[in-house]
Image 1 (cartoon, rainbow, N blue to C red):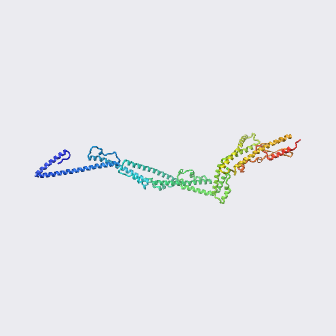
Image 2 (cartoon, rainbow, N blue to C red; image 1 turned 90 degrees about the horizontal axis):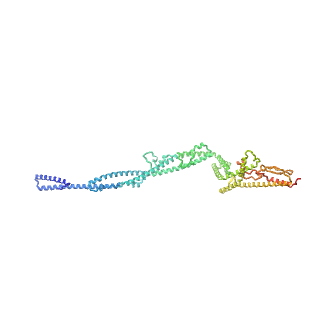
Image 3 (cartoon, helix red, strand yellow; image 1 turned 180 degrees about the horizontal axis):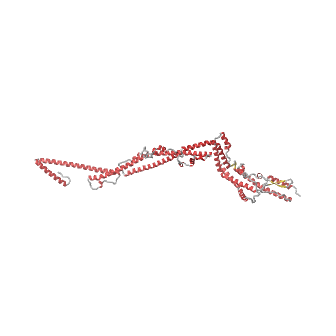
Length: 600
């Protein structure tokens, strides 16, 4: 018989077997079994024992094989988990131990590690699943659940073979990217919604209905209903904003046109402050840009309709008062032309305009517009003429001073110590300086006027006459005046020479002449007895010297200056002026006396 196990167990087993064999032999002996039978039965007993040993060996071998398989399976599972989780730093404890271990020891050392990795895998799977769910939800919100980007989601499909931290980080990065995009889209949607709300408030439109047409979630009251942030919603909001801005622009322009018409009608109709105050709210729109108009309901159709109705009312009222308005505007045009010395257009004269309105030959509105255009043109013309008109005024003022100086020089009592005499003396000094500048002023005015005409390719007219012609005539008249002065001085010298010769020939002194070189000119004529007497004569300016042609005297208009008798033609000279007739009569008298015989 074979002994198994440890030596002690083998000894104990052999002893037991021996005792049993001796007991069996004793029994067989008692029975009377033969030795051959006993040998046979012992042989059978030995075979049965071998069968039992063999069966146990087979069972033990099978158990060992199963243990080997379990250890291999655990190691394979461990390797799979390590690879799936990316835990490359984890090593199998079997490979880590240098000493040899039994299969059960190996299995017991691997199994807990595998269980830990399984739990870790389940947690990692849950993380992946949660992130993927969020990604799918946000992707659906962004795409509107109609065109989900399956390609992007497919690239992030959950693969149990790759549950590494690298893969988890990739999922988390994609999730954060989608969350940022969602936040940006939500912010953009809210901005668009706020802009729509502001535009609807200004236009007085239903905000809820407007945004609900884009997507119901934009005006939903349900807490569970999230705001739609899809591309279609953003595009819808942008299109709605564009429509609202276009409508705002149309209404602003319409309201501006209405306000402009109202302002024009108010000015034409001389509307009261109370009438204007009713629309003072919209009157400021003319100076505002689109973005500055934020008052609620400011561009509502109700306000626009009210303003339109007011325009229609004033237009009807304007038609009944059109003749009065035409006359008023024509008077305004004539006043502007009078102030700027421009000839007004005769086609819209008051008599002609009223006749055309009464006969129905012309539309009063067109006639009024024509007059307003003429007013605008006259104002523009006045602006372009301003510099020359200022020069004309300075020239005319100088001429006024010249006239005053000549009148002052004829005053016999100008040097008397009367009241205000020193003031007149100072004014006379200033006037003499001013008079010396008149020729240069005229020349400069002519040059400036010619430059104006060259620049604008038209004549500069002053009360219908060309200013250059007036100035040239003035220069000619002034030259003639200077020549008359010179001729008078020559005549006076001749007069004094004749008197001196007469005194030397006849030895008698003629009767003294009554002269007043500053007051009145003297004329001379012969009396009946041949003697000479002085006869005071006041010669007119026109007979002594030609009248200087200034714009006022040239045009013949009785304007304010003429009403004040401040004519700019030359006044009586500050010396004795003798007419040609008086000079000839004086020469004839002198000649007759020189030819008569001397007294004894």
